[in-house]
Length: 105
View 1 (cartoon, rainbow, N blue to C red):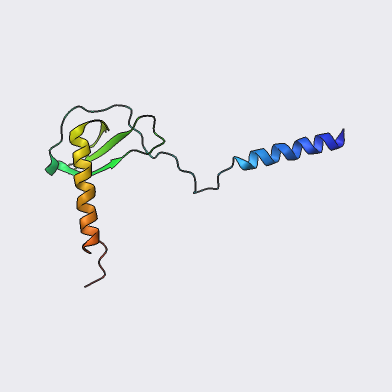
View 2 (tube, rainbow, N blue to C red; view 1 turned 90 degrees about the horizontal axis):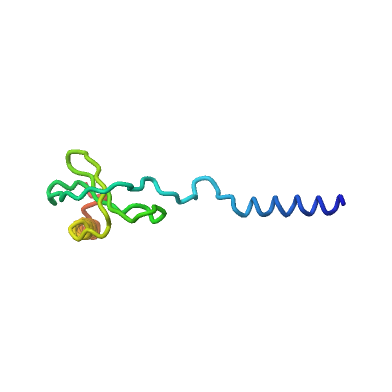
């Protein structure tokens, strides 16, 4: 009986440890969108745009305007997809040309 209890206890300990995630390695969504805007933001008013985390219930884009507003848009909206690709492409060009993170004086 003692051996069975010990074996069961070790089994439970092993199972609980296998589901433990080391602190700092978990990948949970920082912010998810639950309501979406239907308005259109002019490209010159967009400060940044990013996709929501893949763990969010609905895929979306989070747009931050130059005024500091944060607005959620469904990922299926064509103009938001184009804006995201444009911002991503601009960032890639800036990085490859050495504009960002340049160590030159």
